[in-house]
Image (tube, rainbow, N blue to C red; front, side, top):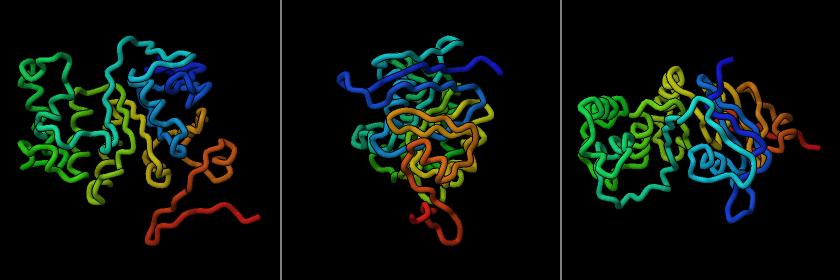
Length: 246
C-alpha cells in the first residue's frame, strides 16, 4: 500500500484542555473515501478541525508523511456569514487564496476553472449574485466548488447534505464519487443509510474512533463500536431500522 496522506496516532483533542476525543488512530490514503458517523457532540467536527490544522492536539500526533498536504474543506452552511458582501465567483476563487491580495494574484486558469465549476454545480446565471441571496442548496454548491477549485489531495466535508436540495443531493454524491478518483474524501454525515453506497470505509466517532474497513454496518456492529445512531433504510417508504425489543 502507498504511503498515507495522513497518519493520526494516539490523538486526543478538545477545547480548553478538556478532551472531546481520545486515543484516536487513523491513516488516510490517497484513494480513501471515509464516511465519518457518530452522535452529536461525539467529536466528528473536532477531528476534522485537527486534520485541517484548525485545532492542535492535546496529546498524540498527526503527521503528513508526504509533506504539506493540499486540503479542500466544505464547512457546515450554518458556519457561513451570509451577510458578507461577496459574490458566488469570488467565494469560489477564494479557494486558491494564499495571500492577502489573492484577487490580484489569480491566473486565467483559476478564473476559467471557476467558470467551469459554476456550470458543473448548476450555478449558471448566479456568478455575480451575493451569497446572501442564495438558497441553502445554492450556497452549498458554491462552497463545494470553492473546496475543489485548487484540486486538493484530501477533501473534508462536514454534513454536506444538510441544506442541499433534493434535486442536487443525488448529483452531489455522484460528483463526490467522481472526485474520489483524484482525491481522498473524508465525509462527515449523520445519515449512514445515504452515504453507505458511496463511501468505501466507515469511522464511528463517539469520544474515540472505531474504524470499520467496509461500507456495510449492522446495528450489532454499531453497538460494539458504541456508536448510537439510527440506521436509515431508503426506498419507496423511508424508515428506521430499529434494534430488536428485549
